[in-house]
Image (cartoon, rainbow, N blue to C red):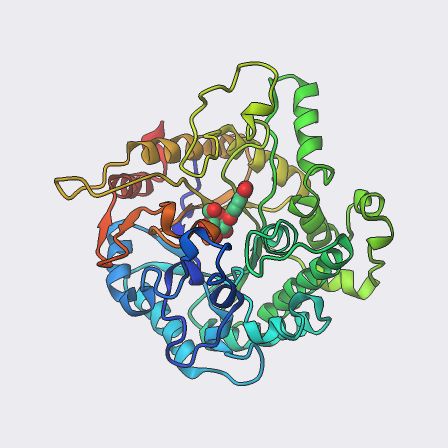
Amino acid sequence: MGFSKDFIWGAASAAYQIEGAYKEDGKGLNIWDVYSRVPGHVHYTETGDVACDHYHRYKEDIKLFKELGLKYYRFSISWARVLPEGVGRVNEKGLEFYSNLVDELLAAGIEPLITLYHWDLPYELYRKGGWMNDESPLWFEEYTKVVIDALSDRVKYWMTINEPQCIIGCGYWGGHHAPFLQLPNKDLVLMSHNILLAHGRAVRCIRKYAKEKPIVGFTPTGPVYVPENDSKEAIDEAREKSMSMKNSLFFSSTWWSDPVFFGKYPEEAYEIFGEDMINPSKEDMEIISEPLDFYGVNIYYSEKIRYPHTYATNEYIGIPKTAMDWVVSEDVMYWAAKFWYERYKKPVFITENGMADNDWVNRNGKVCDPNREDYIARYVKRLMDAADEGVPVMGYMYWSVMDNYEWAYGYDKRFGLIYVNYITQERTIKESGYWYKKLIESNGEILN
Ligand code: PNW
């Protein structure tokens, strides 16, 4: 059976991670621009000031995307490039960049998919309290409208918010992403609710104003546990753990996805947060649960074997890991697709999956990365298994299209299908990139 004929094959990126040009053509600053430069926050205090200089090199980059055989390309928009203060004044130059990018992609036969928010909150809005401010959902709606007016005549696929888990979990709880804070649950609950409202308002805005009939989703992540064996008990246990907030709180899937798809917070949230939990109005929950077209999800590894050292047995010693120290655990693709479809009944769209490695350009000018090819093959094959069993799988986006700024790790981790020399800005398509092209051409059949 395999994947459907219209399977969405592509690769992804995010604005702050590749664009650079951080204060050019009227762009306002965002929280990454401001807080990445504070010593102690990011590996070697690296910033996205230049990154892959994609802002200036997008035409050359799109030629390479075409060489990779990409049919779709997922990218995010920098809010502060479009609205330097976050609200109010529109920066036409910034909008023009995205409009040109979309035109260039379409001319190359690549369909754009847009993420509205990939973590780069405008600094001016942060100064007004950011997601703590109850106006923040309205700010996001205003921004969405500007983007929709400018691009929805040519763009059909929209994703509101990337990984709300990381926005709160990494940015305001663990404190290892901008703005590098560690706040109490009461604040985190409030901000979560505002982010969800922002998502819902954006969905409504997209549906109301898009010029082309839009296909809309969001792209959460979250722990997925793989069953220990094939028994019903093991599967039930894995499902239950994957759906639970207990170990992961703000990183959990259900904290974010239940409100979106069921219009209510998980019962567990009331037990766990106690008096820090909010009592949302019916109207708020209606906004949050505005219907979506797909369940987008970013998947990298199985939670079960993420921490091998915590296991009593020697089963996981020496287990394959990527340069992020993330275990290679492809069964997670199969179980995530099964579990999320079963719970939320929406087509599953893998909006990110990929691996970091310590790649370099060899003496012959090639980047040989057989492990990446193997990683993709393993993960996509297990996704195909889920599709074979009837799970509607909409697409697969490799993360990422090119090496880029890996947040708090700076430029140390290379996820790309295209290698980037950050000194010369020279690009080299990796061997895995040429192989990915064949995978796309065969619609996944080369794995059979
Ligand atoms: C994603 N996890 O974040 C982000 O969307 C990308 O911007 C980022 O570059 C990429 O993954 C690689 O890190 C995640 O622990 C971070 O499961 C962590 C997890 C998942 C996604």
